[in-house]
Amino acid sequence: MAATAGEVTCVAFWANSFGMRARIALRELGVAFCYVEEDLHVRERSELVRRMNPVHRSVPVLIHDGRPVCGSLNILEYADETWGGGGARRLLPRDPLQRGPRPLLG
Ligand SMILES: N[C@@H](CCC(=O)N[C@@H](CS)C(=O)NCC(=O)O)C(=O)O
Image (cartoon, rainbow, N blue to C red; front, top):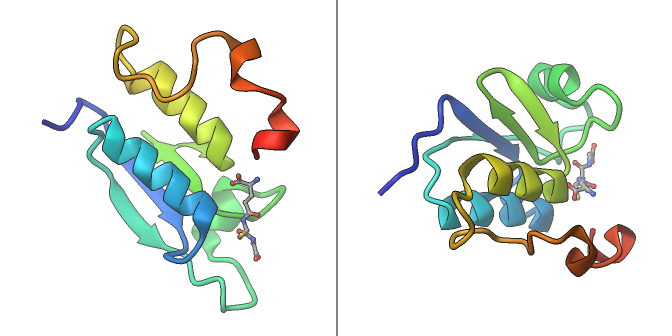
């Protein structure tokens, strides 16, 4: 059953592993979301990506009720905090130290 999520959009490119990580996380947590394809073959990023991720202009971007979360690991952490419930459904360890050094993960 889908978790109550508000309006959730995941902007990604179909073949992008970072985007797959974000989409798998949302599906694992049962979050209903709208998928928006960003064609990375096109040189310019879409207006949506430029507005939601103006610094890096990269995907994936999670948009929750109009607010962006950029970067797949940030998305995993945000999804855990928002929809991970009391702990049984969490994707990442609750203890930040157990998540490992960030640069090695992402
Ligand atoms: N560390 C980021 C990496 C995201 C990233 O590098 N995305 C690339 C595609 S692999 C991108 O969107 N690049 C923008 C471009 O090619 O214009 C994450 O985990 O989401």
